[in-house]
Length: 428
Ligand code: ASP
Ligand code: MG
Image (cartoon, rainbow, N blue to C red; front, top):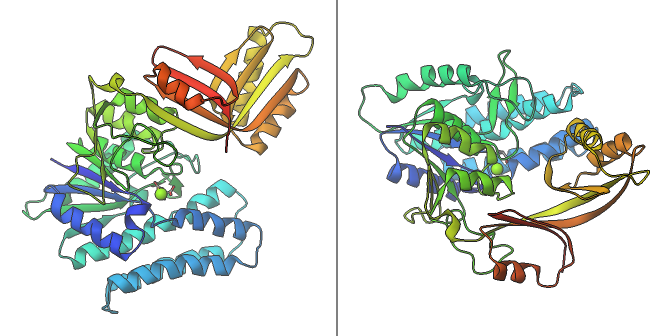
């Protein structure tokens, strides 16, 4: 049966990393493999910078474009000493197309332009990697995800048309994967990007390549999906911020959804549902240590509540509303507040109601908050704090919480049976 591997930007950030990916594919690939790859290293950020410069008529635009091109050219020349390799021609075509695109004025639909430009990161990376795998004698074919992942025209956040996608993926990949030849087959494609019925490019949201891999796994009824990362798997807390973290070797889909919902960034939050619908196991493994077992995410796990997991979200705003005449907060007030939040595209991370006030915690975004306060400022008095942290503890126990809070100013707290959340001021 088919398996799906996903390699993110960090796993293909330089020539050595690409060699390592080829090694993993050679060693761990089943007979039929779909490989989904992101843009190399921090290319998506670099292309976002290009886009801003393009929009702002910034004279550094050409410098930024050249930085993106030079970064890839260095990797190409390391991987392909033979100058006649077709990869040079294929990537030059893409560089040229990208430069051509940027030599015309933007359409002024920023989100549309974003997708048409930023997709080059994935298009270039997969062109390089397919060339390298072919050079290594791996039976690899490159598929253009824009022709397979069908979305609507919600630029930067394309909504997948599952029926069309299923048909497109099957009819493109099955003849290759199911063909009689007995060598291992690798269908390579881009993460993060899709296409509309009219042929425009869309993207699925930042870090969306995990989601792409899950869409392919779903469409092909894959036996398994593996996300290869630079961490050993899913840890119970981010080692950048906490000591003594450990690996969760086995969790349920439900737990994975909860952890990603609260902000665990190991896998994209949209990844689990398509897998859960088909009962496909997701493994998160280290590309630096591919023999290690990593984390397995499966339909059920008895172990979910054995460990406290801690998720930290920084740059939080806590905003409290009070009705101007000091009356109680009532349902009609809440409906006004929720309506305005939806209108401004603010996602609530935590909320709490008291007699005369209603508080929400969300990811800091000045533009969205200004818009919100313009809508609601006439009706409500408000106060807010910024630069806060939201700490979520799944399967909490009091000693863990005491250790985490340890005298830090606490602004808001909420506990359910499995989850405790705290909005705190940042300490240094
Ligand atoms: N390259 C895209 C990004 O950096 C998608 C991904 O990495 O998953 O957001
Ligand atoms: Mg990335």
